[in-house]
Image (cartoon, rainbow, N blue to C red; front, side):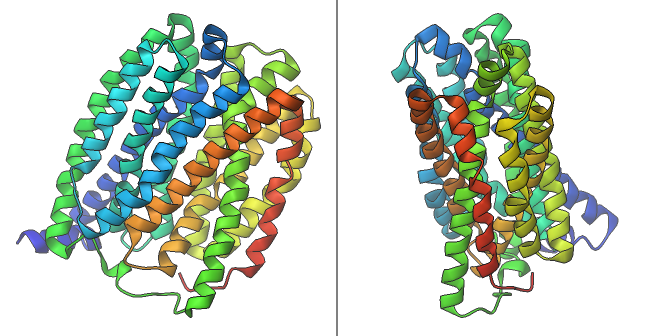
Amino acid sequence: MQASKATKQYMGKNNNGEKAVVSVLVLVSIGHLLNDMFQSVIPSIYPMIKESLGLSFLQIGAITLVNQLTSSLLQPLVGYFSDKHPRPYGLALGMCFTLAGLLLLSVANSFLLILLAVAFVGCGSSVLHPESSKVARMASGGAKGMAQSIFQVGGNIGRAIGPVVVALLIVPHGQGSLRWLGLLAVVTICLLVRIGQWYRQQLEAYGKGKSKFDMENESRLPRHQITIALIVLLILMFSKDFYMANIQSYLTFYMINKFGMSIESSQYVLFGFLFASAIGLIVGGEVGDHYGRKYVIWGSILGAAPFALLLPYANLTWTIVLAVIVGMIISSAMSAILVYATELLPGNVGMISGAFFGLSFGLGGIGSALFGWLADAQGIQYVFQLTAFLPLLGIVTYWLPNIRN
């Protein structure tokens, strides 16, 4: 009876089943929203802690590097372990690490303590992303791109809200007010426990979290073509994530340096970029399901290039407009890239999701540290002029094979 109920929910064959699947996707997206909101608070407080602790741009980049590497290095391992030994309540356990990191960050008064705090937050993300991505795929009902977009858009909205939370709560009341986010982390833990209950039902029905969407290789590609496709995807991830790392870590500094904006005002510009990125994710997932993911990848990364190249030379108004446009376009590739990769290597959703999310975070951390060093040496405007060329690497999409997905 339990397996039959789970099957109906998964296939969405009746109204109750459809509601159950949609509710799971919404819960996963909300969990991702709250997790990534906590993550985005870290770069959003950079101007504040840079001033209070006397940090250099290189140290700011190092904070991002530690945060991103703790999640990026662990995510593929967590995903691989999850594929072999699923742990439905591991999601809630991971959020406990994030809670510890937030509480430590609220009292950290040295560079080393901040590094330790952001490492804890990174460990929490290393569990959430591969596991939640698997849950989204199981609840997709076949619309894998849209399900992945719904999951990821929660993260993008969370990253967009983070700067606003900092502007409204943290900047006026100081670093210690970060502890209030700990209450939200406790709420998130309860939410993830509920997701874990549904996840456990799926394990009982299918075993190890697999579904009919993971039973065969839809691409039917020979090994050498799969290898080429994965190399191309890695190049595309490098292009996208290095560019996004610069915007997310240094857009506030750029707006302050070039246009004399206040810290609070610059946070709202970052919010606009991140909110536009969330919209782009939804559009990319829908288009990819209907017309093919390769077309989305083409239009997303290479399509962002003209606007990215114009941005460093625009006035205040057009800088904001171009930042929103670039955020919307370039973000639409992530769900397409991830689903494309899982179709190349089916049955390894956790490992692939962990590897690609981990790669995204790792590249972001490396890019942030590198651009911090360049900003110290050459100035923040030079960094924006240099990174504007990164989306041109989208041309390598030409070598992606066409697969039925």
